[in-house]
Amino acid sequence: MEREELDRLKLLFGQNLIGPDELQPLIERLGWGMEVTVPDMNYTKEQLEDCSDDYLLVMGVPAIEGRSVTIRHLREAFGIDPDLGEPCFYNQDWYMHEDFIDRPLESRWYLLRKQVIEESRAVMPDQLMEADYAFPTAILCAFAFFACWLCYGEKLWWHDFVWCCDTDHNGDRIYVGKYHDVDGVNKNGFSVHRHLALRQCYAAVNTI
Image 1 (tube, helix red, strand yellow):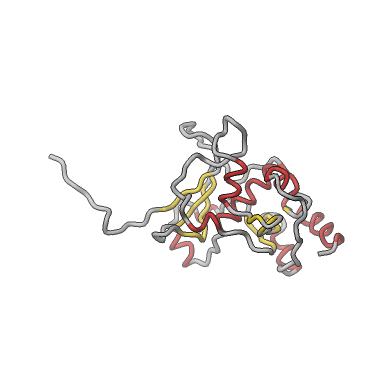
Image 2 (cartoon, one colour):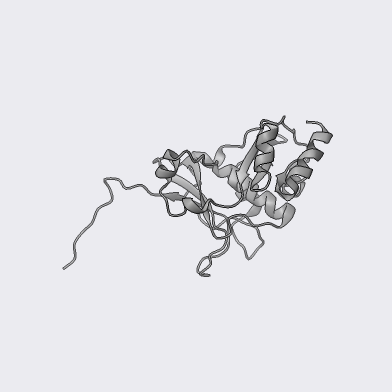
């Protein structure tokens, strides 16, 4: 992609752009090399103009100097203890053996909505998918979250979870986000959770 086109994207999206320049703070934090390949644009001019106010335009980077950009590697770079530094991941390890944390981004551009859609609150993910909601990957959400924080100081989904298209080995839906617990019970951290579906192993006992 030519520099002139990147400049036009910056004018259109402003602080909603996560391109090669905006990714430099994240790449420095990872401690990896600075060279990244800029993919060709995969959206139309009309799509970009329609989404520039409400969506992030994120440049996907699958690998830097041969090292995959995955949730596992982001977690290694940012840690799990807010007392040692923020931003970080929420301290949990249930997903460390799940396949989705090792899936990298694709080398392409992504449009990712910044704010949750109000009418989607408290609606089951299967219903949302039937209504043609297109969930992002967990790695895209994590990548955008840390890139936005480091570049712009913006904290995406501060009190909200967002559904992802990933599932765990049982087929349970992944959801991420909610960095800050408004009740102050849990420590800060980018959360990665799974929505447990009802199966035969869930049942009840009586007490008398």
